[in-house]
Length: 198
Image (cartoon, rainbow, N blue to C red):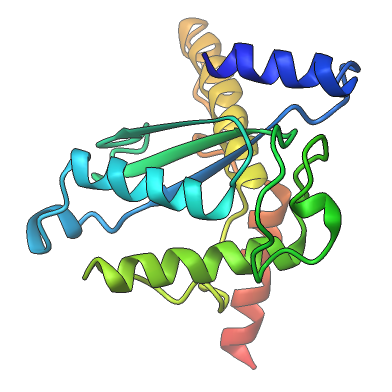
């Protein structure tokens, strides 16, 4: 299994023993919701694309690839989760996007650098182009881009706010705030408000 492969690699190379060690990396390839209707994207095809993407971009790492039709936000987009063990278990042939020996040698850890993330964005765009699927330009800023960290902070904050508001309602009081905003979102909205006036 994936978990056992990671465990064996960690023991073999004496790595990932600490709680703070990065043991896995999680990447998500999210397809346009229109692809299912317009371009015939099925779960099986998305899974096959994800498997090939994993083989091409994370060679030598134990990995698990799984696809599902929709997320918790009901966007309707098929997406593929790729989770790789952080430790490479076999030496692989050097690829153009690999710049240091740790990128292809067994026993070395995956580096999630800016250059690697840029390579992966380009690889996703090329994959979509070759498969005749919709795509966006992943190399340019996309307006109100929200990082994954901020997205989850907003979700947690909204849950806490909903819980607090439920208590107030039970006591017969009216909540003053129903939508949670992160500090970044408040700042973003203030900046846009000023930009619109200048």
